[in-house]
Length: 71
Image (cartoon, rainbow, N blue to C red; front, side, top):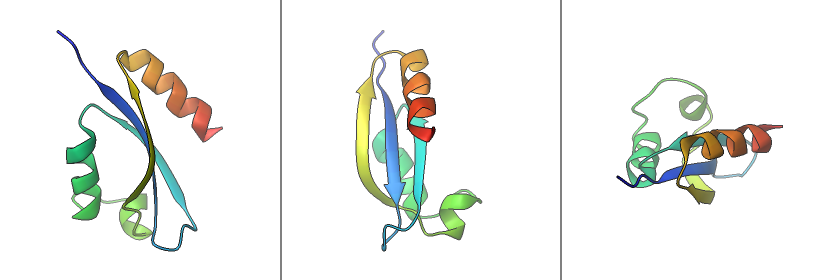
């Protein structure tokens, strides 16, 4: 079975803060950020604009890339 994994970067309206995450369903995850389904950083700073994403077929590669971007 094939799976897609996405590393994504979100920002707020003024592009003053950034958030990096990993998901297997990019569309669903962006909607969750927009409707503020989860408490935390993205809700506190209104981070819900997608500015970049990368596609991976292996979760380990996606997580490694996320960690690389966060450095």
